[in-house]
Image (cartoon, rainbow, N blue to C red):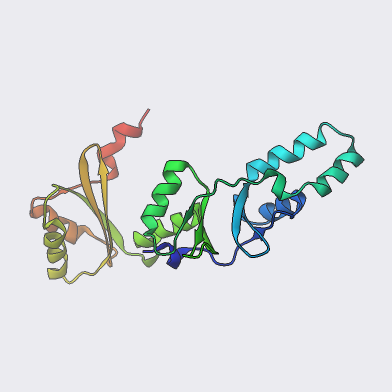
Length: 219
């Protein structure tokens, strides 16, 4: 999956001259945590976060009388509070690489630009969660099994062969690591996975359930 296939293309943007009060209204009326700032040529020049606006507005309101504060607020523009250290990604980037950047840098979103540096999209945490749900096949129903495997060649080929021989379709697969253990999650196009799980277990694979980890979250 690539960034360009999941990015938002229709989203709110502001300019450096946008009043901060207007930017505040845009954020409150959307699910965005930040607004991208573009100039008159539609070039990306920065971004402004909810926190930046929240910090800017009270500081004026608390130091001046009401009428003077409202006047100054109407003159305060995004240019005064926007951040310019924006991190961008390209549409061709693999979506998991973008997710890693967001995770490592604790970002609410990333601007997507083309080779000419023009803003073409935006991805945020909601997009990433949607990707996770989609890649794990949850929206397609079915049921899932989890089993522990050795880190060796041919595991998925072997297990998928078992499932194929039983006439069951695979909706999605995923691999996760926890405490040096490798676990494979497979979502199957059946309501009850017990027969498939039993066949996999008889081949020497250890099935895993939430009960195996209860000691890690129990008080």
